[in-house]
Amino acid sequence: MSRIRSNNMSKTLSKKNSILNRLLLWMANNKRITLIIILGGITNLGVIFFNGSEYCVKQVCGMYIGGLHFHDSLWHLALANSAFQSFPFQLPIFAGVPLQGYNYFLDFIIFLLTKIGISAIVSYFKLIPVLFFILFSYLSYIYAKKTNKSPIFILCFLFFIYFGSSFSYILSLYHSKTIWSYFYAQAMQSGRMLLNLQYAVSLIPFLGVLILLKNKKLPLFQIFILCLLLFLTTGFKLYGGIILLFLIAVDFLIRLVLEKKCILWILNGILIAFAFALSILVFYDPFLATKSGAAFVFSPFALTRPMIEAADHFYMPQLVQARYYLQAIAPHSPRLFAIELLSVGLFIFLNCGTRLVGLFYVVQALFRNKLNKDEVVLIAAIIFSTVLTVSLVQKGTWWNVVQFYGYTLFLMNYFAAAFVTKIFSSKKIPTIIFGIIIIILTLPTNIEQIRFAYERNISITRMELNGLEKLRSVPTGVVLSLPLQDTAYISAFSGKQQYVADEGVLTIIGIDPRERISSLKNMKPIDISPRIKYIYINKKNYTTYTETRGFHPIFENAEVRIEERD
Image (cartoon, rainbow, N blue to C red):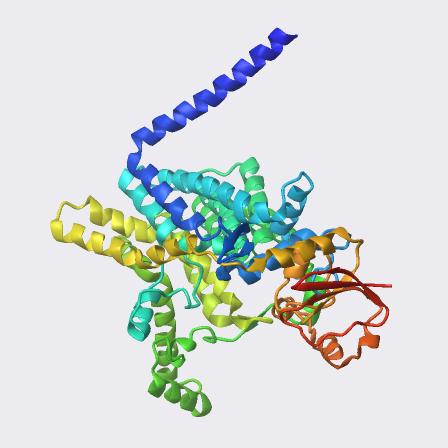
């Protein structure tokens, strides 16, 4: 028996050594690709990996969660630690209301990981980002290699999917005389993927679809895989699911035209549509979520108008006045349309950055009639996602439709890489210099974000973490926070539902918290809702509190006081 176990262990070790040897051999044979992957890992993981760790800064100890993560990460940690304790799933920041209209799929996975002993903080800030980067890099390499085996193309493609960035630093240089431009709101850039973990993870099945669609034939088994990948993408991020559904539909339509198999591709299309609809039903509960109104509303150019309105953007007050005047007296004027198109063009310029060189590749290929089927599909998806971005607003937070454009930028990386590949394949010195300039102009925002890997501050002190740990240890019950919080941090660290918190997220998912907030502002201590079991007082930010009748203290330190209903 021991000999059998020994043989099995030897085989396992042999396989591990074989995989490691092959990986080391590949890295030795692909030094430049290995280097760019390592650099991509530093810049991408640097914006998230150190979050959720405890440090001491200037004699104050506690947990670091950077400002770029602070709000959204706490919301997702609240979902993972609180929402799935019962069925139907409950909204952690508005007690008594079921979770609705939100992409909770990744948070549910994090919740499942807590059941095997991996904390939500470790999963969110460390485990999932590292696993994502490994898998994303592998799939990106496979996609690039299936597209063009040229090492130059693979390098260029990896460069843009890791470092593709905006021209926000141009605005920053003009207005503030500095290249630091993180304060500019913009669509999701390559180096910032992990600032929105759901978006980042959605790119894994998205890439899987792009790889599968490279195949000339799609047997039924692969159609089912496409359905699964679309289901997953939609679950992780609705915006990505919508774009991917359109992309697959265009691909199927082209195959139908080329193969003349109408019934086959209509049936395949029905399967794809069913997978998308099933994901919507499972993850978004559309019947409940739409009671407060449609998720998206048609409002052309709402997102792009600030390009010429905002003083810290491409401020053009005369054109803004002309636009308002024409909207009032000549809403169908060609001049008004030209002003709107200028705003759209500036939006595209700002967000696409050096990826815009991909347009040269597209125009050149169109004139030479050299666009292949896959490129036509990508172009159609880019146009579609751009149209959605500039023509819609979202319920709650109107500008959230900018998340559609993150997928536009992701697809634009292909064409930018294709164009730069042509440049570096040339033997003409001026052409190569132009390629180097493109690379240099892409880097400023990536250089900027490296400094965030070294940023350290205490976001939640150790004293407050002690209070939250105490709250986590007591029996289930609704928590009233004083003062009311604009983040979900109490639910995130205690696993308890809050009576009301994070008004911004509540608005996004279609819940109006004003009545409950108003009642709290006007109530007397004896009027506290019987639904509330615990009162959590942040003593630094709430100094007017007096003891509430019917409650007794169960924890107190210099920063936190927790009371429980008698």
